[in-house]
Image (cartoon, rainbow, N blue to C red; front, side, top):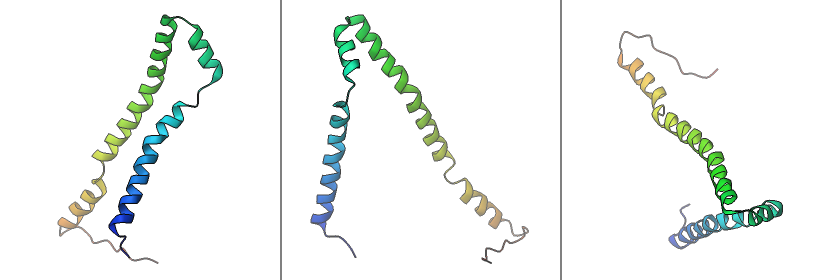
Length: 99
């Protein structure tokens, strides 16, 4: 049962609005102690805090990118193995029946 275009665009608009609002809501949730400590410290401390946040954020992003890259590279490995096996006529055939 296909959706009509108006409903589809309404759902897409809602999803877009929610995705744009989510970062604003997450930035609003900060620790009061961290805020007061950062506000009371000097500019060097604020810069060190920003650098520390980047140092904590970069490794997980690199790990996620590496996993995504490996998944992209290996995405057709199973299909390639099956195609290579079926291309060889002397290879024994496999039965894919369920018990």
